[in-house]
Image 1 (spheres, rainbow, N blue to C red):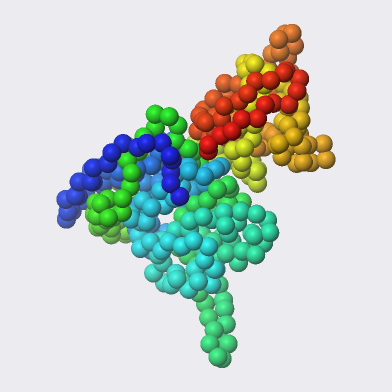
Image 2 (tube, one colour):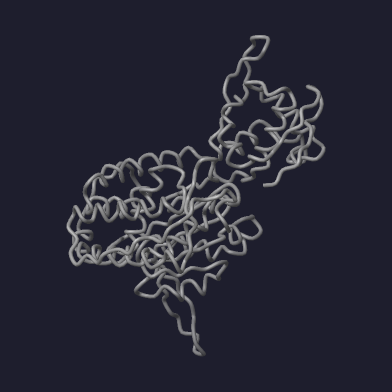
Length: 399
């Protein structure tokens, strides 16, 4: 999976990292800064807080023996080409003992963990949990990932000719990348990174494994040396957390890493925790993830002359009246206001009170709220303007 079809800046090889026999707090903060800059060179994270959280999660994988909870990193996006697999490429080169897999069985996974757990990296997680029918077949995998969030939650299986019961460890940090949200029980145990397609003007360097991985491996080796030296401190720290309950369990390893590194990282870690947990608390889960709705709304606005706003009723009429669109078949009466709001919420777009040309005020959507999402997910859609009362014209698109 490529991150974007947009041209990227020409990459030069990453400079080799000098070995660091000792790493004090100032050096540790600089090390995390260096890792942050390296990630940002190859992939665009949705926010500065998401980038900080990813750096801290990577460092936390090297301290798995001291954690009570193993936070998941949920790398999700609403469509293809959002950079999910590219981020997983970078995680593979920097986390502790990576084991990367696509669509494996739960039995294979828990037999891979053992007493010294690797870091699980699961790409294309939507092939495991992407639809209710498929997810139902993978309930054991969901249960394994849920159990492995906390230390001391093994699975029991009978093995061998004697069918003797055997306990398999499940505790391991894991990153899962895929289109759409993961099951809510996994999302609840995750630091959630909601990837977006790169917009015009957002550039990254192409990543080449043979050229760029040696410098990433050097960063990983320096992380290993530093985390080994602070493992005992990490075990006994009880940091002040800006959140409570399961969110605190999930984010605690990241905050501890930040406190041990010092510099600006403690404040940045808590800011990321507070902001990202609050964002997930407001996000509606189990919504359809489909960039098609954005393109069709773009055509709907164009069909009435691209006004500054459109009432929800008018927008739904145009969507449901389009004979080539799927919206009329989404329910008994077609797409309704609640379903539309749920689909758009994933893109950060919400309805509100809008003023109509006759100065009345109705519930609806401002065109400006869609501008960023249109640039990212349907930049090549060229709508055809037609009559104000008929269905929107159709237009081809390349993405």
